[in-house]
Image (tube, rainbow, N blue to C red; front, side, top):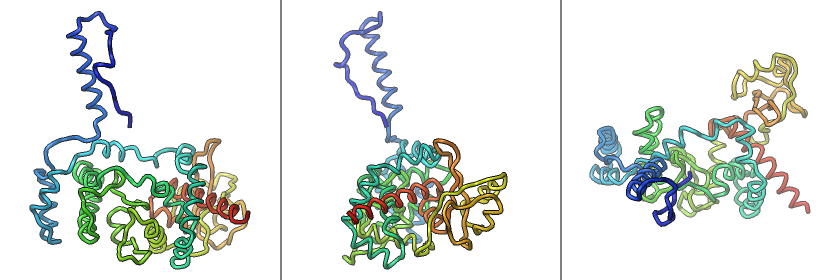
Length: 353
């Protein structure tokens, strides 16, 4: 986000034919308007006074035994984040594929993925042995989510989730549930909600787990007694692999393959959506075939993306669909799949040399 910087001392001569007092007043008004337009935090009335928040607190007290006074004190310090509302209104997944792909599938992210793999090779190997998820896929998800821990989020999670739970009606029920999960998570793990940082949507740590996923799928992969996804890449590796396994990952099965299409029937296959519902023989009858040999009985779907040079068609399999359980976007899953393949090839090449 662009910020406005400046001071009265940065201007020495007025370009207008106004007296200095009037000019200064106009400049001050402009600066105030600019600052208001770029403000990230809105200091409105206290969330603790909001009737819906008070109802939420009462339920947390009655159902989970939280202390009412402590919760209201916490909410009195929560900030309404206007930038969170702006960010959720324009997610990257709304971009076409040719604009989305360059965000995540980059030379830097491939190189950093190889470095991450080398540094954590033993943990990645153990995760693959235990959960059946390839190291390349785990690496790619952490790379897409946080650039291998470099960008895990700058928003206080309590601010983000409260803003979305009580000021974003479109998905208020979802975010109120996540806010409930956040309080439970903090109590279980000993987190201080005043310090917990994450994404604008409340996702946390190297793998960007929302609170409910953290509670259900995070694992203490190094057996130190703590499930730490914020500062422990070993736990992050195991947790990503566990998440995918729990959502149906099948060891040894492919994610995707480029398709070649002909005729007018293949759009029917595209229209069936991302969940695999046809085998390759059925796809072939509609005019879509894989560019390399694949098992014919494998269930698949046909996806079409807007590439830089026109439409691209891809055949996606069960494990590709599992990746969309991490983020319900075909664009996201394709970015993960392509980054995983490129990191794997680069890693293998480096080890051969």
